[in-house]
Amino acid sequence: MGTVVGFEGADMDKPKKIVVGCQGGGMHAAFEVGVLKAILENIRDKNQFELVGLSGTSAGALCALMTWYGLEALGSANKAIHQLEHFWEDFVARAGPETFLNLLTFGALKAEECEVPLLGLYPPVFGLNPRGAVYKAAAAFLPGMGVRKEYFDLMDLLKKHCPHFNHINWKNVRTRLLIGATEVVNGYETVFDSDVNKGPVTPPVSSWHQRLSLSLAGVAASGTLPAFREAQHIDECGDYWDGLYSLNPPLREFFWDVDNAPDELWVLRINPQQWPELPKTNADIQDRENELMGNLSLHKELDFLLQVNRWRMQSKDFAPFGRRDVIIRTIKMRKTTVDKLPCSSKFDRSPEFMHRLRTEGHQVGKEWLDQWYQGAAGSYPADAGY
Image (cartoon, rainbow, N blue to C red; front, side, top):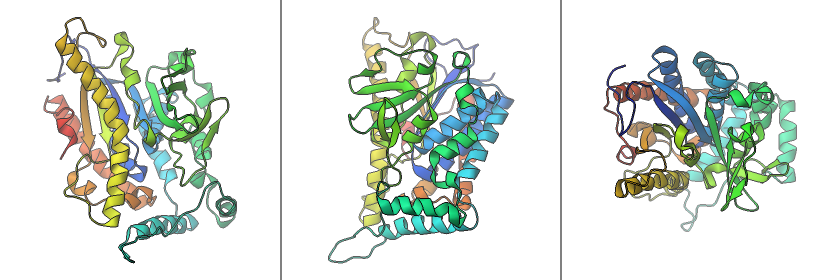
């Protein structure tokens, strides 16, 4: 190996143990698909580090799950690349009725952002209650028009791409997976954790924080925006919405076990930390509100880890993660790209849009890994800005 960034107490002869967190943000997660492909290619070809954990929320949960499933159920980084890319190619709209449906829904959301001033008011243009009769009737009608059920039914899509999920030997799982969701009634921030599948966690609920076994229903729950999907019900556990409201993505659990804590945490960020100027238009305000909400829970997780670093520096006897700091790094979109993406584009499921972001993510991922290997990669929080 060449020069690798280290930390106090590290064994420089061993590959770094890395965990990767995938932020949620709709179709902007296509960027993460490209970055994860670059990471998996590195594992396959260079073996510069060991990927010991993945986490994700919402669309980031889909990225994390497919990468994890390829590694654990299919058994190789190369198969994980195929699993990840094939899933997202299936997730986007196909030519015909699905393309029309995407134009209709994405177009309506885009129209909602348009400046149509009426006494200073900007009323919503489009909206259907997913619990209502009209929405359910429309969903029942779509297959007859040639729209695949898995295009609008996330559970069907997950079962299609993870057919052996229920046959995984959990005791032999090496890569940990954390998925973030929000329990709606009691307000629990919820982590669906592959480690729980290895044995029961007692108690599963602590201080409004809940750890449950990993399941496809849990991943579907993580991607359940209430404006588009009815709450995901999980028997004996509750009803769930998107993890955007509580954990985006979950990260702290990776560091609870001192003996197996990772060396570095890499965050794939798709909601920008900074903006070029104060938002003024209706579209810009909606966009910034969505980004700030998407970052709020992420900062809560990262600030906790940084505070532990500070406590460790202040006391020689304080060593919850061993005698070392938690190293956090950010991989993010190019500023020229992120500045041009409105909130509505998070719902654009066109193949062209997905391909463009995926290509950029792959390029950014390869460039960032080269910098990391040379010891030139930045660290959080400085590397989160532009």
